[in-house]
Length: 385
Length: 114
Image 1: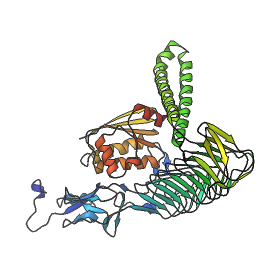
Image 2: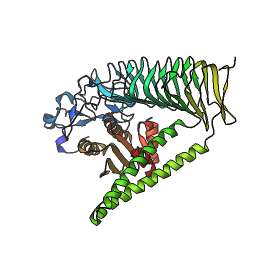
Image 3: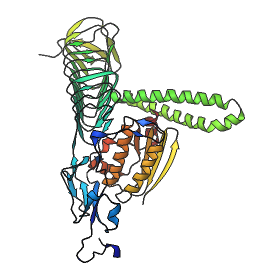
Image 4: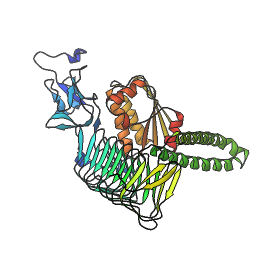
């Protein structure tokens, strides 16, 4: 550890040690303040609620310093002896016995004098202007609500309060104990599964299953697995290649279309929609640039490179769209793709499975809709006894 | 020591990283990134990792902290062409899904275009 004469220990006087942190040891999530950016704007959404760390990441290291050097250092972390405050989910770096590394993904903080990493983030209040958006590398439990305009990103995410018009991105499962009042702007994604007591005016997307304990109203659902609604499913569009089970009532309400697009990968639809939007934007950009280029030779010289770049991107987007359509064509409708309704079906429900389409014009009860010989047929009962 | 190159294209900020992204270089790169993120006006940050042969936990920690900061502010970070080693390491610490990873220009166009 001693590199030069300045680090030689005088007789009987121990050289001090300084604990250099690779995180902010004074971070206090209870007193977050919005920062003013260089542009003068104040970002109220990005307060940095948790100090994320990754398994193996260097958190702090002890460095031997001279007595003179200690003057400019934080005296709280100057020690007479080399002491490492290594707490839970932290470890001594195998490559450096004077360094502490994280032993788990989580957030780092000082707890009772020890550097500690917590794997589970408990937000014991609403996600709002006091917390800002919450982005975490592991599991999150929000004990309050997630307010409109805010975002939560985590592994498994549990929200005990209401999810309002917020965005939630769960790399695992998403569950709520109260439900979703999405105000037509909530966007909830979970890689593995979504479970909600009720949901209205939202968009749900998952590669797994969706379970709604009561009603699902005016919500667009993209689900690769199954959708189960224990009471009423009314309004919105469901994109799925799996099973839909609605126990009490499907559809209802004049002017409230309830639609199903089934038999294809729901995320391809989502991607196609994005690509279509890009094509529209790029077309408009190319048109504007063409108009500018036509004004004069100088304009042409200035705007031609931009137009050519936009045209190149437009061509690429057309190619991507064609590829998506080819993927649709290559897909077969999975055999389990059907809708089961032990309760009532109201007129106005529109169902497409693969290339087949059916609009429900009557009041039905205890039925199932499935694809047979390229047509959607209705059978009863919904579930064979 | 790894170097950084920066290029702005409209709303996209391209950040090229060259060399190993390890504990030794992370503090310096973090400082540079902090400044860039503070003054940069962009919607997407594309971090080109094609020139990064090796990345350790501290390197991932840096990427996590940038991504958290951008996500928190409603912006997007994309990892462009990470090496197999980088992908493996991200997978090992179960953070592959924490990032949007793209391998081709078409993918980049689809994500950014949308």
